[in-house]
Length: 633
Image 1: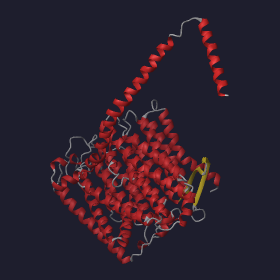
Image 2 (image 1 turned 45 degrees about the vertical axis):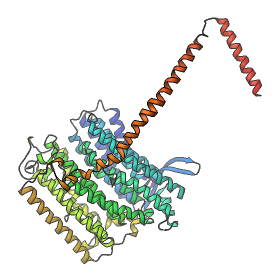
Image 3 (image 1 turned 180 degrees about the vertical axis):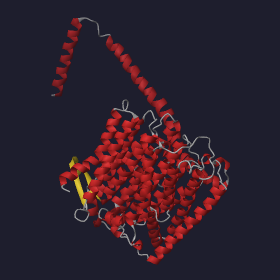
Image 4 (image 1 turned 90 degrees about the horizontal axis):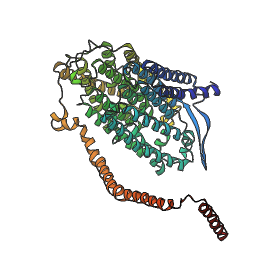
């Protein structure tokens, strides 16, 4: 691929969804739902096709990294930052995930949102969200990535609060916005530190020079910790994860886009992109490992007792993100990215499947009022079953391969973490099959009239189900005769992957896979007996007792955050208002206003209407001006 073609195509990838956003926003009052949705889908589909052409034309052996510079952007003092894209294996992988899965979510939205009065606005926001995410993954320096980073934060705020007349939804949007801003502070400070160290924010230059710093260098550790703070916010890790489950307030396609293909993967991407730096900071990697493992377990435990179909999936996302961060903490960057990819397939499938169920039941989201849907919504059931098996890590579906890669690295480097992650996998299988059984098995417990969704909704489900089945083939391990193709491919873009070492014998790997598979199967059998044979329904948190009640109440974390941050902030704000505003600023501004008013009245007396007086005043003014000039000189 020659350079001119590369420039044109790489430029088109983010611009197409941007054009879709602008046109949909400008014509939102005149476009029909199908027209705006169809146009938005075509734009993102076009972006996917161009990304695919770039992927096919990319030769990682000959030119592993290509920098496409469009113009000099910032040139102040010693700071030179071009507006440029970095086309390599990592950015291409993310571009295909964002645009590929994003296209299916756009198509699904045409059917799901066609009755909404603001459907054109919705598609404008959805296209803009995709544009921002593409900017994030294609940027050749931290600053362009940060612009996309902020863009997805803004778009998520708009989309989560899309139905803004609902006060709770507005609160959820604001919560997401604030928590992400906390993380963003870390990214900004991290960028400042990196610029101070390297004199540039370009990825290639920083990674090339990073080797001159020794392992454990204080400034590198500081910079990586700050970048990780940003990743915690965007990718919902402890303690900045509570916004993600509340983000379910947005329309279901938004949930799918945020949870599967875009926003939450940003933190993983940032760390893999900066993997050379993180390899120099073992302390930071340990922090990532422990927080990722804790997040995986905490979120999985909360998912056990949720009754809202979308909330269960939301906590499963947080838990799976914990697995990805645990992989990064272990230095298994390729395993983390592999799980990002397979997770994009089956989580988008599960969220869109949940949306299809909600659509079939006229908006019902409580799984206690579902049941018996497998005979009515057959396509939704079969595809949801595939997604459930995939996320549970059963062979030969995609989730098995990616989760097994993480568990294998954990077993090699830290047996305690391996045990905890294995326990998390068991919890995952339990709450996901609880969700499946209570939704599709038994007898129907609601009052709606269930029906299968139209093809515009079910076709994306079928495509994602197929990807969830075969996605594991992207990185087949040596034990199955594969060559870990995805790992080899990504290693050309992220040098940290070259440091990965998995030295387990095949016998050990077989045993590990056997143990996790047997445990998951036993869990499914237990869940079948509990939720199909007996149809055990959990009450609301207020009706539960002891530890179960605490877990169902999300470990009281929202209440803890409210006590530690929200209430003190509210108290300080109220006192600033009552003292600073009411007793200082208001009297001050009122006094200045009254003084100005009185001065105006005095001066207005000079307006006599006598022309001679005005001429006299003008001459007097000129004389005063001349005297001042003479005095100064």
